[in-house]
Image (cartoon, rainbow, N blue to C red; front, side, top):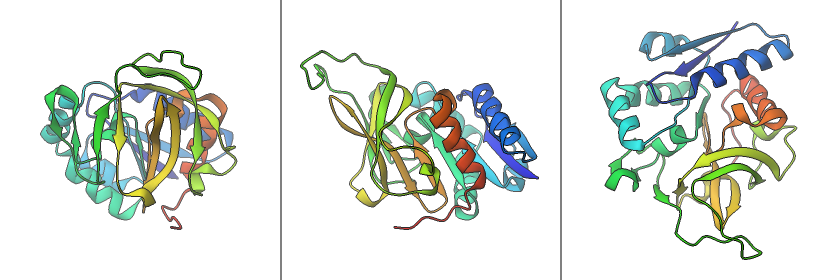
Length: 220
C-alpha cells in the first residue's frame, strides 16, 4: 500500500490533485491510499507527501502557522518524498514580496517576487500577468521525476509571482516568460514546481506517476 498525504491547509487545489493521484495509481496497477488532511499523525504515517497551494501568500502562511504545517512538513522532508506545487513551492522560500511582504518557511534560500511591468516575449508582444496557461519547461538537470517527460514539455501555470534563488544547484527547471524564471526546484526528498502537474495532462500525469515511485534520492 502506497500512502499519499495531501496537506490540507485550506489553500490547495486538493480535489484535482487527489483525483490525479488516484488515476495514476490505478493506471500502474498500484494500490494507493490518499489522505487529504492536516493531521500530523496521518501525514507522519504516509509514504509520501504533497504540499499544494493556491491564493495569496499571506493567507497561506497564516493557515500554515495556525495548523503548525511548517513543522509537519519539515519532519516529512527529512525522511520521505515531498512534492510542493505552485504556492506550496513559494512557501518554501525565505520571503515573498506579495501582500507587502510575508515571511515564508525558509526551507529553501531565496525570495518570491512579482513579475515586472511591461513584460514582452521574443517577438515584442506584451505578456499578461498573471502568467496563465501552457508554457515550456526546460529541464536544467536530471531528476527521477523527469523520467519519460520530454525536455521542453508544456505544463500549465497560474501565477503572478515567481521564485528567485542564488542556490543554483537546486534549480531543476526553467521557463521563459519575459525573462527566464525558475519553474522547478529540487533537493533531497523534495521536488517543487511552480506549474500544476495535476492540470498538465499527459506530461503532468507522468510526473505524478514518477513521484509515486520516487524514493527521494537525487544525484547532484
